[in-house]
Image (cartoon, rainbow, N blue to C red; front, side, top):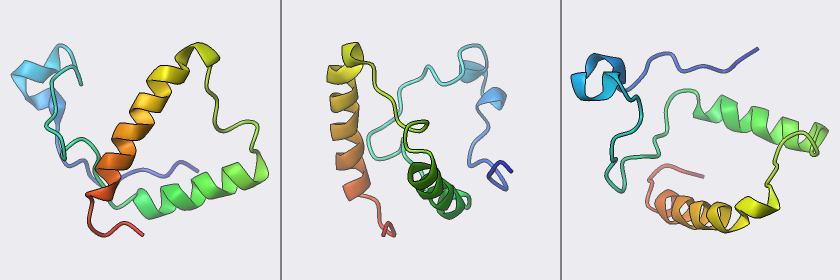
Length: 86
């Protein structure tokens, strides 16, 4: 069963600037990771999948390692600034 949000915090399709190229607009630092009502259930499901099917969950092509490490660094920095995370 998919774990979905009960509502979306924004509707990019209703913004004329975003409707043609969804998601291709700059996002301010501190505003691109959001915790919503589905977060807890998604983390439980993530833990279950990693525990039960570890080879099916994460994957990183060696050619993408540098980009993946850069993204990980940015995500870690961002998450450290979010209140309410365990």
